[in-house]
Length: 287
Ligand SMILES: C[S@@+](CC[C@H](N)C(=O)[O-])C[C@H]1O[C@@H](n2cnc3c(N)ncnc32)[C@H](O)[C@@H]1O
Image: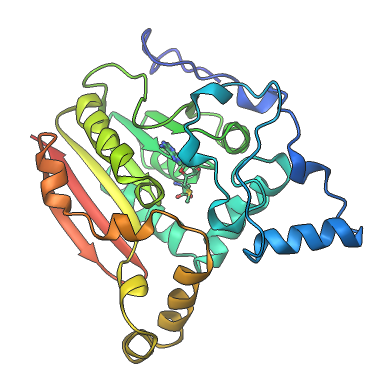
């Protein structure tokens, strides 16, 4: 899996995720044919029961995962930490978002087509990394704190380097990348860590390097149902409901941020902030 032509000696480790044995977590042992386990599953996916993520003994890199990540984001049983539900999540996430996620990946990859090196922060199942490779980026990296998602990513996209970790402590050298992408990551981070994440992106970008971000549009969280229906039809109502149904503890804090000021604090310039429906595309440049 390692590509000797693109990997640098001081890059963080990129194990062969496909062959790594990962321990089961509690959702992996649910017997969904059993009424008690099925009820437990239903309580979690509907948001009726929510507990902190439990990491199993022997999970590689467990001590590097900050506490704020160990939550059941999107009402997923044990969040992004199970062998069983992460595969379904990778495809289900795009479906629930009515294919807007894959469209956003294509747009972001198109923007960075032909760049020499790009890091996808919060890469999840690696789909955006694959799109970047397909558009001629030779040196593509993905970073994510979930070894379970990285296992799928490494299996599906063997020409990409995937490393375990968080973007606010990426482990890459200064000025390592021409571009960084982050799709649906920043609204999952508390403001304190988001500040660190932008500082880290600025550190590992080359001068003139670009940060492309895609996040949920603030419209579905801040506008009324009636207005969304009038302006965006049934999709407006659907995303209004979705923004209130799924567990997104830091979403409103993200929507309130002054992005121009955030980037300026770290030597970056906000070049674009396109608020559409249901996506918001942001582009910042390191000066
Ligand atoms: C909503 S998912 C989006 C996945 C992927 N970017 C996509 O577009 O399909 C958010 C991802 O960010 C990861 N994540 C959460 N906090 C992170 C952090 N501090 N640094 C890097 N990745 C993080 C999660 O594990 C998860 O895979």
